[in-house]
Length: 263
Image 1 (spheres, one colour):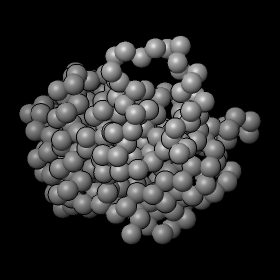
Image 2: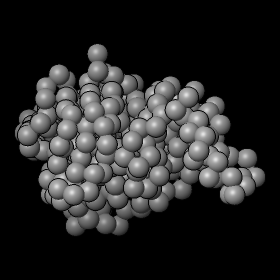
Image 3: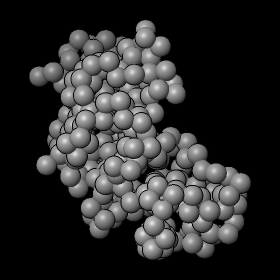
């Protein structure tokens, strides 16, 4: 069963700019899926079409549909989507810097308002992110970048979600921290049965933890498949996984003409 289905979704900003063009994505229940692509490809817009955060940016879904747990999300406000079990961790972390980590976490528990549930979720978050427990009384603005990313993910978990959407969680972090956070995300997926939809420019790291991935270019999905298959694709290797280091940029035009991923 798919927990999330996007079918032929188009998004327009300001009634003029077509940002994503007929995108179809499925996230299976308990699955780990990645959206890969360069900056501006349409990855974040795809997530916002699910969480309902397009409207503040003057965007709207103009075609297709988005379904979560077989419910049509069209016209549903963001708070209602959160209560259904959708958690969206935005790019750039965006924690409340003037509050402590614990205050950040408790603020997110207002979604359900159950005291015992809040206590259990807080214990769970501290179990996954032990640095947050050690610094739970420090102002969040004084946390390191990695700790703030942990806090952003932990805050999303306080809503007890069925699906966790992560937008560029590796941004600005050292490779060791990226590896640690992705390892924790995999544990959360496995132990809590939370589906994961990951947006990443770091294709190398993303393909290590997901089972399936979609590659987006200029608002279109140009390739999708199991992560182990995408890792072996020659174009993915050359343009998203670092390649051999011997790329002749005079041949880039031939890459465009080959359109190897349409084969």
